[in-house]
Image 1 (cartoon, rainbow, N blue to C red):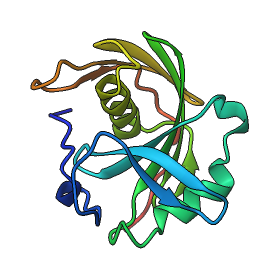
Image 2: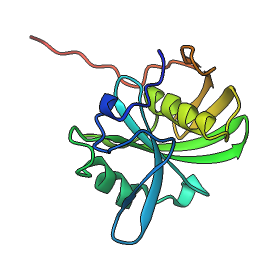
Image 3: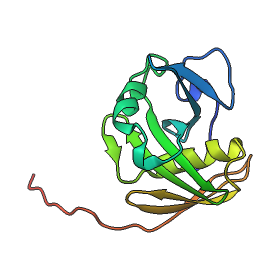
Length: 156
């Protein structure tokens, strides 16, 4: 999946510095997150439990936040243990999705950088699990099942 890029310009993210953690105000308080590009822009928010994470409220708010001029994908990550995380992703332009490979990679990269996940971890999404391996300075590797979820034909 390539190397995670934490430079704010890679998302782009309008901030005056690069840091492992950022925060923005949402009117109810500050929201903490990590930011990374996996070829597309992602932020990852730590949550206690993905089942009751405010995906429907914060997903669109953060996707369209003025700090992200091209919008951003928003991941809500619950750390189960150093080898397991649960994740829900609000994708820009699509809303919440069942699975997001780059979102799982972003969650791994941010949480490994924060010391919450080991170099190899299972990222559990509503649509299934992905297994991610990342050693800093190296490419990030993702493995998991691939399944047909839709088939269509179109006459041109």
